[in-house]
Length: 504
Ligand SMILES: Nc1ncnc2c1ncn2[C@@H]1O[C@H](COP(=O)(O)OP(=O)(O)O)[C@@H](O)[C@H]1O
Ligand SMILES: [Mg+2]
Image 1 (cartoon, rainbow, N blue to C red):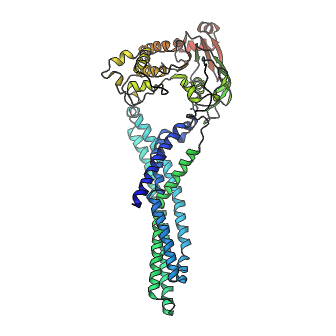
Image 2 (cartoon, protein in one colour):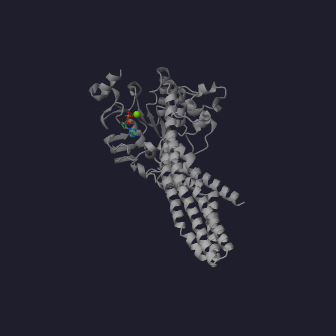
Image 3 (cartoon, rainbow, N blue to C red):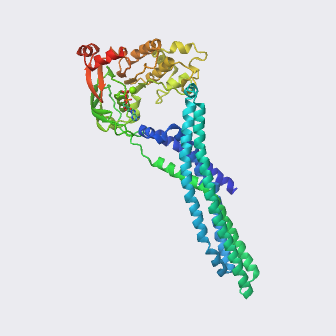
């Protein structure tokens, strides 16, 4: 009964912890995920192991521990009743045992911490190679990644050998102390019996009382490896729970604008990524994004175009300057509301392992999306015809990461997903650059259709796709160096002209 109840409480604790860890992870800002130690593999490994590790210090373990402590307590009290002097001698050994127990936990926690790091690295290798299995196979790197994984496991193995030695030594030490104690008790007891101060029975009784207590302590000590794992996992979990994201993805605080027409001003923006402070990406960047117009950003690779989009989505806070949405500071706005105003299509569309309907409906989680709307969005994205020809039509499962579709098809589903929320602002980051000419044309048509009547910021790889933009801005070294219409910019024979020359 006792074990059952403790086991149930332990399991439910694990489950609650795991759910809370996952939710907390999703709440973190992008900065958190940029940190190298928080890669996908490490986080998955932690999610899988940490919550259950904590159980090592809870549930049945708590039961055993409580039992041991009370055993020892009662044993000592009884022993005192049968003969206090003998008991005192025995108790003199207890501090040494406690010391040994403490050392065990302390040393083993250190090793458990190290183990975790290595296991996380192994997890990273596993996740990376499995999720990119095509690339791995193409590069014939299976052997390499297999070996790398084994290397990490080897480290763990070596650690557990060390742990076994440490543990063995200390365990021997505690055991030895116990036997020395028993020896002392026998000699002293024999001497007292000889003197006639104590009866033989009492000596035996005390021996038994203390022995039971000491055995209990020994048992507790044998739980030390699990216990130390639990401690190190708890530490990690607590530090995660205590981390307050600068930008809380789930926050519901802040204003929602009743009338947002799509005007966005970027004023004197300064930015560097928190994990790379030495590279100043934006320097005094100024741009006014006019409502219902198409603004194009062009420039060489790495000049900071995608960074601007990420700042607009409020994934990061700029280090200087301001982003004004209809004259309101971006951080003062309700984050969920703001992101719901934005549709985003990137170079690499990310689809989920679900049906086409679900993938498109994910675009708007704020309400129940009707089938007609989904179909309309698909039509607008030029993908309805294709879907109608699939055997299961909209109920086709597209597999993890959309592996069963071509790049252009995936991209058009991603566009439909962006359109379903009827966004005020559409952000397109090289949406067609990964496609062949034929697909590019189809997707481009879908995008032209989609951006009508919306504030659109488009980053283009090929200048041909943005020639008709209302305004083209050339980004160079973190600021805008030229802006205007296509023809004006060409006539100026400056940055844009050179860019056009080099890309033709
Ligand atoms: N998450 C990140 N962490 C650190 N540096 C980054 C990150 N993303 C981009 N950068 C760096 O910021 C600079 C601008 O990148 P980006 O905005 O992606 O350029 P692009 O104009 O090609 O879209 C580059 O030097 C890039 O290496
Ligand atoms: Mg980019």
